[in-house]
Length: 173
Image (cartoon, rainbow, N blue to C red):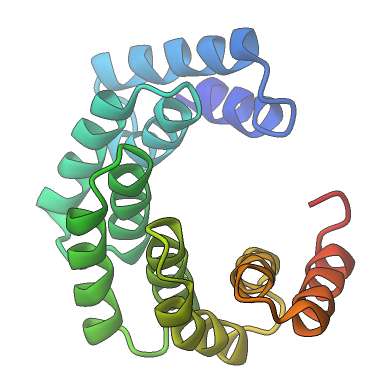
């Protein structure tokens, strides 16, 4: 099991399909043997997501949520997969519940804002993305998504400020 996690950690930065696939095989084997399932499912869900196996990732997330329906990470990941799969309404429902239940979660606001922007509702996404940045000014993704929303609304100066912040927080973003 630990080998799968080690490979997962090592392979994620490169996102090499071969490395991710090997790490996934190790985690599959660990789960099959009954070793460390509690921590293996989140890693496997992420690897499956990275490998664009959305249904497999959703199966793992469902297992995690069966144990703990309030697991914020699993719910954010689930909403992200729903959004990437074009199921924006379901993603927004998930993020609406997350924001309601976790009003201090910058990630819940950021993902809801990103989903709104993805559906062409940049004006509605601004409040969520600005809240996410206020809750966690070091969130590079929220800064970048806020930059993109402001750019699409013609607020170029503000967009550049947020893009600059995102790049300072995560060079090469």
